[in-house]
Image 1 (cartoon, one colour):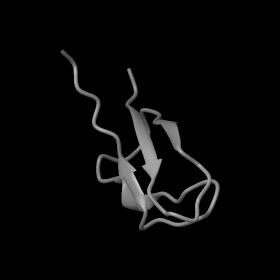
Image 2: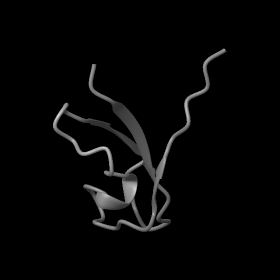
Image 3: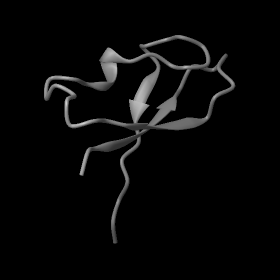
Image 4: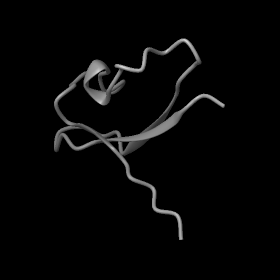
Length: 55
């Protein structure tokens, strides 16, 4: 199953809280959050992956 990544934009000026990215099998292994931009404000520096903890 392709990866799913939860991402938050931490830019104080941005109205977007969080979004989810669904990768395809063709996504290169070298791809990181730094390769993407916020779909709302356009920044790349403020994106952070949300760590989901399983209990």
